[in-house]
Image (cartoon, rainbow, N blue to C red; front, side, top):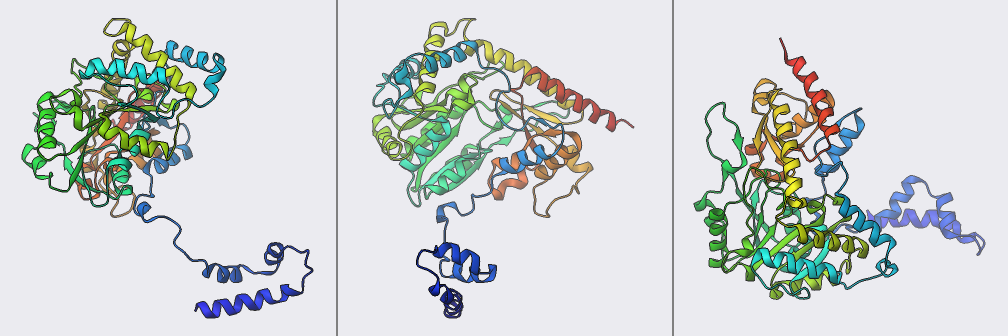
Length: 469
């Protein structure tokens, strides 16, 4: 086949030899070859383009559902996790000062972090974790928490290493494990039974200790902990963290803990960093995000805290990939933390005020969703709540979609088109074999402006009217 294709291509190119030497061969080819003959040329260059580490992770549900919402008129976006209101004034002013002040902030800073930022992160979190944190050895500033996670996976996970992931999980954990050559091992949070008519809560969702212990093997390299959890909004208790810590120490496993929502905790619950537990600092990477901390997700400033024996490997990945994060954004985050350190624990603290405001948004959304028969799982923390759609699954099981498409994905598409509301299906946040256990939940983001919540209310009011006999 290739021999015939080559002969055909030579036959087509042959006449070009008589062209003037000044003529462009590329132009001549473009003018002479037919689409069929171009295909023949391409046969001689049919090498695999994408790296094998991309196999199976090319589909992005976020792109799919955002596109669907954009194609419909007047859809209220409650799917994506970002605030649609202004950040605190002190953060905006800090950024304006960084842009208009010292002209050297337009240039490179130190590769592993702008010194004032690494210094304040070391001071601020050192007190919380009970550690003497060295700004040079124990802190790395990254392009958002996403960058921190990717750097950690690339630095520590090797071919064939097992990585334990608690589901439902933030959706990048699985592809990042696969891209590093690791093997994801999943363990599910399961809801405890509740009395009929009582609201469910994320605190009811627990890991089975025996099942969890069974996931640790001699090949386990890392345990991924996300507390507060996205999408569930669960805050892991001290007892749960102690169980994880014990297993990590027993099996010599690194804990990568994603704590970007640590300041958004409600109803008197308390966030505890696993790195603060005895024996865990030396085997834990703690990841944070300025985007979630100060409501500035577009700044893309994140960080990793941990012992030098782990951090030195992350620095190697960092310096050979992105090398450096935006200096002005880092300067603004540093100034914002300095302000917050002065007000920490006081009524004037943003970390006190913001959760109070967001809890009201959460409660507003819960009440509104309940009005149409959706059953929210009340979150202890984070930007999100998940909602049980079992009643709809029972009443209208045959929504349009592919035969193997999870119900929650079909329901979200139906809701976007017919109700003007966008959410994210929870099956996106679980492994493929376990999707059938989670396909009756969808995720909403409640960190939204009052005008967005009012627009949601109008959509739900119309939906409720349609449900009336």
